[in-house]
Image (cartoon, rainbow, N blue to C red; front, side, top):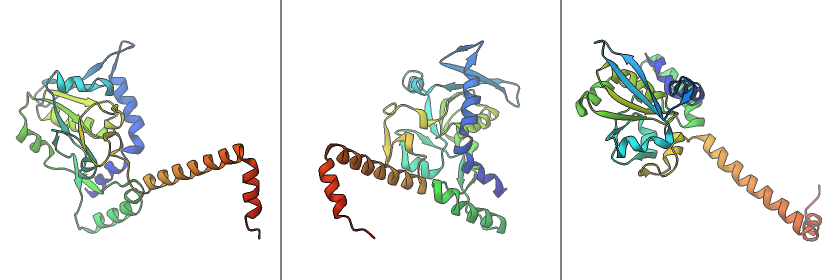
Length: 237
């Protein structure tokens, strides 16, 4: 249903809930561990382990344990920044359906979330699981990555049910991975791939205005006589 597409648009606002849940998975008997497997049972009764890895320890899975990186973000975030040599299999795809309900929801989305946060109007990718199965065997070690951590956790759930047994996710997503952890490509940093729209522009304007105000304060502080003369030259109404 088209209404499900708005799930992707609410990821940022619910990321704190996801972080709390994922951090809960990483605790055991009151002790913090590098990662704590979350065990789920699939349809065949086989228990699989999903590792939720802390951002500063995730590279070890790729370089030492041979995990393949599967990026489940939408196309726009993937194009902004991505890990080199990763596989892109989006959990959500752009919704271009033209039924009346979808058109209404897409218009509302584009005028609010799309405009301010640069989020595309999406729907669940019906071919997600099959696309992964076509590239990897059930025994493959897969590190699922997204921007905030929600989509990778949802993708892990789908793949576990499909029989995959070695799945890992990054707690709170790529936005929390230290810069330089992975070799990346794109027009921005991995941590900033989720930032777009008017919110980003507003942030840049605020930064410029802040710098101007700081410079003005320093000028008045260290050169009070010159500042006073400039104020006398200013036109009065």
